[in-house]
Length: 96
Image (tube, rainbow, N blue to C red; front, side):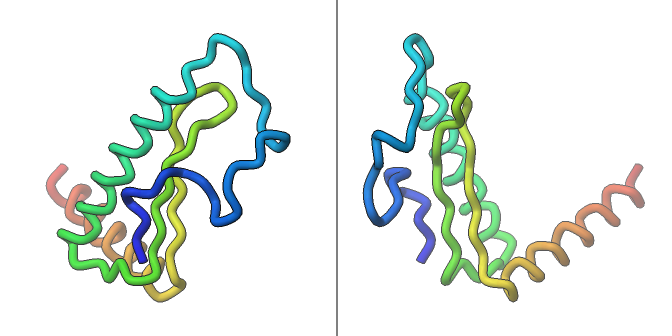
């Protein structure tokens, strides 16, 4: 299942003791940016025909507050995405 709309917590929930919170860092802004980027990436992969069953996109905030998107793919799907990236890169080289 693709967790595009997920809340960024692992299945076990948030462990506050495992996170260092720095006063003044806007973690929510980074998370919101990452959530939007994850949705865009999921839409783009789906539009490209990538099978998203078993894929997981997760929005999180880094220690500095910046947004991070974590992508987990089954091995076959990762190979499919790699092939699409190689094809796109070849087309860009050819056009340039």
